[in-house]
Image (cartoon, helix red, strand yellow):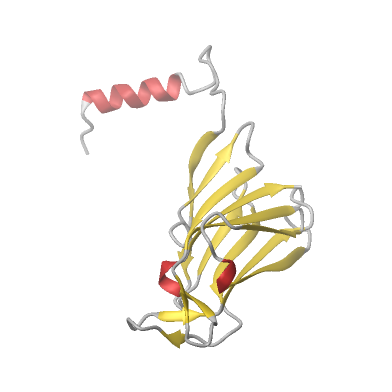
Length: 181
């Protein structure tokens, strides 16, 4: 295969003068080092101990309507997971045929010691009633050495004729910020 000279020259230059070496300044913030499997970003640098996910978009579909996002360090080690989402109640059909659920359960897990990828995994669950799902609402839970903070970005909440709130499952969007504690 023939490589155009400009691309070849660029590859040689990048190889010879990589970022942060040979006199080139290192970046001042976290450095994006690529995606791991599920499409989530992996960072290294000063803020390497924090991650942020927009779910469901940043998760990997599980085939059952849920998605999983993995918390991965720059070395490729899985430190924890977020399972988005299930419900403790049975779904009902909304007025436009949408699936409505009375609550949202987000499973989280994290290594007991993030420095040791063989350490035990601790699990926890974040439970949000449909009536609590206003944009900006936030709740945190710890699993292992990871703190997971869920913030509601979008949720279409409907109330039935008995006063029971339900959330349209397809409308829910949250950010999950993860940090090492």
